[in-house]
Amino acid sequence: MSIPQTVAVTGASGLVGRALVTELRAAGCSVRRLVRRPVKDPELEIYWKPSAGEIDAASLNGVDAVVHLAGENIAGGLWTAERKRRIVESRVQGTRLLCETLASLDAKPAVLCSASAVGYYGDRPDEIVDEQSPAGTGFLAESCIAWEAATQPAWEAGIRVAQMRVGLVLTEEGGLLGKVLPLFKLGLGSVLGSGEQSMSWIARQDLVRAFVKVLEDESLHGAVNGVAPNAVTNRQFTKTLGDVLNRPTFLPAPAFALRLAAGEMADELLLSGAHVQPTRLQQAGFEFELPELEAALRSILDK
Image (cartoon, rainbow, N blue to C red; front, side, top):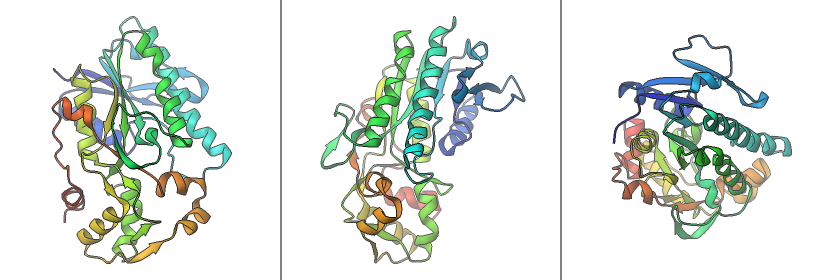
């Protein structure tokens, strides 16, 4: 197993993409970022514009691997009908365009690692799930099913395809943790609803290493859960973050109030979840640097 020499990355400016590009370059890879603006340096960038069906196929010819992270932020605003349409289209259209293009190349990449999400499993309050578990129900599950199905052209062209079902990514630079830190630091951290919903999380540095593992390891294909092995409940997460910051977390956030504020998004993102296990990664010998929540939060927040 060896890391690919040339890797193309979509979503390279995002929360995970930035860290992945840094990791790949530190490992000696030549990284080429897919960008939606005019290319400044053809050695480092490749043009694409999924909404217009545009992509520079010639510049992808001969790359060894592709990591596909691009997609509309699901927590970037209320889930209006228009926003839900954009969330799905940004994933499905971009993935299909990329995969159809890769399938058409003379010199195809050996592997495509395409992001998905643990939302695939829906709300599973009473069971532990892994990559063998069936899809759940709801908007997120349906979106993930369509997202993953859009990789089919690459599969059919003989490219090894892995779908990384990513959980809650922990970094103080953004995401859920970045958003709630100011509240927790003020002593306003809250249990959401009942607090019993599962939160399947992963430290960003471990997720980046997991993407690299998928690129290197030919045994990894199909669904791969990008989560730490120790999911927690929302109540446990809230208490642990409060303890790490040495702040109280006694204020509740009732489910009805969350629904009034965020509508359907509250039910699927805040009040439900699944206890997801990274079975495929563990079977492949992947070792997590931060498998426990408290140690992960202390490392991330330097506490």
